[in-house]
Length: 489
Image (cartoon, rainbow, N blue to C red; front, side):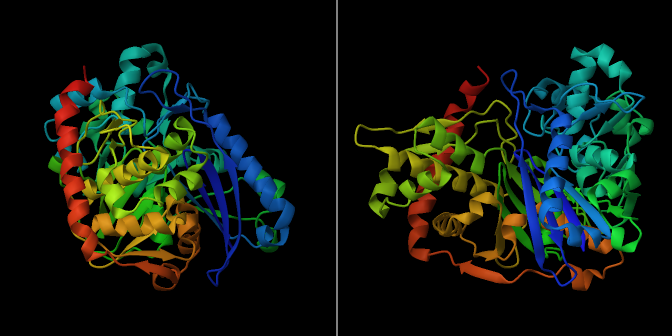
């Protein structure tokens, strides 16, 4: 039995996985996002610890026997967040998260300071990454920066809570801008550019390796591993998207997935380091040894749907999607356009100043038109990202909360012009991948552990819909270019 913990932005998920691939149980605890100023996004790590104890209590109440069989824990989580610790291991400030946009000026400074930045890291400097956040802290909170003894990523802070060990894995570390991604090692050049050294960094392991051991006191408290002496390994784990890929069996070059979570991601696995920073493509290490991946990221995906449902009084996300699905093809062609850049944007624009825009409203438009515009806008943004990547070999797996809507899945296949598959366990995402990485750390064989889950449904792009979607895509792109100069102002 293996336990996967996935620390997302809106929820901490736990999943118990049996060694016959059965998902035995899941649990979740909601998380709140703080936005104390425009562009800022923060969470208190103490909230993550509370959520951890909540999900473990949920599992204890119903799965005590399964918890006793747990041999290893895997960790997955939101990438890029900066958790600052002092010399005593105490958190110094709220964590600055992946969707925080305050450090645009520091990105420019970092790029000027290290002309080889893109070659070393495989990525452009973007406010979402960790290194610019530390430059911002250095400039705006110098006394706190001086007290910083260690910088951890969110899931790695959970590992610290679980074991007392400061460790990260290659896939999550690749999102800091401190990793030499081709060499899979910290870059002294990048660390020095932010006033840090290797002493500030956690130890690095591969995602499928043992990184630490669960604190015996926590093992006893939760009844973990008692059937085999209570010694429970903690795998290196992975950033949320790399872990989700492991969970979906996406481990070979050319395989990929689309994630409709808080953010929107298209992930394509590869056998080599293949950066394309000029298109704002992310080139990261995979969570498995000797592999890398390309990724396009939009910052607001399912979260844009949630926002619109609240903002326009359309109920919840399911109600908004139901409204959007009522439009016929002619009404879709006349619907407003929506730029879903509610928190800036990464791929392909690298524009922290980008904002949401609802364009083309007329007196005849109603709630269904707005609902459709928002869902379509997210889909068109994902198509922009797909066009920057190496094309996938076949269908892309569809994962994340947005994958619950079959109507959206078909629309997205039509817009991307790529087949999509819904697989068993696709909603589990990073938690399932984390559990599989725990299994590998416990000696599991990759060919047996990382199998693709059974496909529930496949969506083929409808060729007759392509001309209409391409026309909308062209207008969508032209709208962004027209209003982009106004964003920074």
